[in-house]
Image (cartoon, rainbow over all chains, first blue to last red):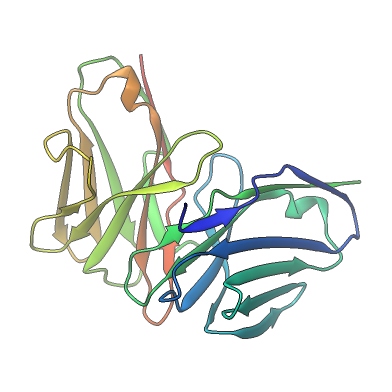
Length: 110
Length: 114
């Protein structure tokens, strides 16, 4: 079993839709949760990070962590074509070593 | 703006040659940097942790003599792929933790070995 599971997609939505991206993880020791956005042939760009359970909002993006079910989510409101990218979740127990999901490819269509 | 700069962004070279990739932290010091490898439509796989002033720590299965890492200053780490072969072709990405934040990544280096 992988430490972090993420549906690879692709996920295709119309412009303006609410997008829900999710990951599950297996190790309860993970305490820091991150979402990165990666455009084609570019490095990952940090979008949001949270510690422990709860929600965090930044503009159109909301990150949600449920440690009881080991489930993390990223919601994108009013999605735009420029949001089309691969979204990677990442977790860590507090050290520098990150464990990544496989990434979900998102396409927002006009 | 980008806080981690990686160079070159794309390199093509003949089989058997060595290729050096640079990773720089801009406006901050990084005692630790990380090197990842990413195959198409796959996630990032950590190759090694680069430590300023000491030896790098390699992940299991990564050949130390194949992928030489040098972290000679607080703002620069280099990855040298020695005697590169077509199977080494991949997307190599470096990262560094920024104070109080998770790792920030460079824009990656696309390596193509002919």
